[in-house]
Amino acid sequence: MLSQAVLSSYIKPESDGIHRGQLTVTGISSCPRATYINYHHLNNDVRSPRDYLLMKNGKWQELEVLEDLRKAGFRLRFVGANQLTVHVGRARITGRPDGLITVNEREDVLSIKARSLSSFSNFKRKGVDAEPRTVCQEQMYLASPELKDHVGTWVYVKHKDSCEPYDAFVERDNSYAKPIVEATDEIVLSGYEPKRPDVPIPLCSSCRHKIYCWKLDFLDTSGIKTITLPEAVSMWVEGKFHRERAKQLDEESREVFRKHLGENDVLFVDDQTTLLEVKKIVQHRIGISEEKFVAKYGPAALVDVMTETIVEQMRVRIKE
Image (cartoon, rainbow, N blue to C red; front, side, top):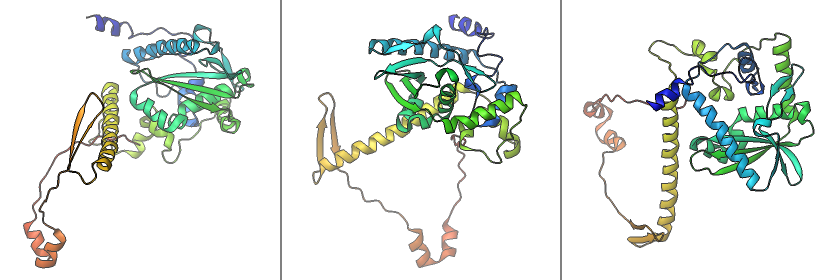
């Protein structure tokens, strides 16, 4: 009953007067078409109460990170409720970076992100390249006159469950930001309508507008159903990551065990809490070679002994 009451209280969230009903820096994309859709509200998804709880949780995560950074001795400005408002381009699109942080006696911009296990691990593997939307957002902040003297942004990422931190530095790139700012000004000030790319670009795979942009032209919708199930998708992505990570760890550990096993038949190995038995097992399996069968009896004979079995399966994959 309590949980339902909480969810119900977020059905009609109140506007904060900043992020709802207008284009902000978070709505600017390196794809002009996405910026156009955001500016004209052409794909206004109805957010669920769970979405608003997640956004609110992000604010609490941000406060925790600020406390951790202060404890580590960093000097911070324009954080929390005192965030700086910046303006991008001639259209003066507003944005509010998470703050400013002094590192090695130089003040840089600070960006705080709380991520799930899969997103956090992907960020550690690929750095900021794993999040093109984050790169665009931070470059837009850096392109504002208010931050024109700052070299770059520290993107501080926190894993929500383990609280493990990681960070990467995004250096100012005016050549990247300039065409995006110019396209945004054209969209807002001149009514420019950028056309959709002829084919999906890499950015489309993580864009919330991908179905809006592509489904009618690229999908035969007969027999296809499209729904939004954030909980199920999140569970599947998390499960896939754990499966792949478990497989990787298993293969790496087996390679270490194989080297130490050497010519022995059994190896006992422990970490002072768990004792493992590693045993060499040799099996002899008998099978029928199609190549040898055809060579001896001919291809027609192979067709005579082949049987067809219908197996119904469900394949789940990330649609690029």
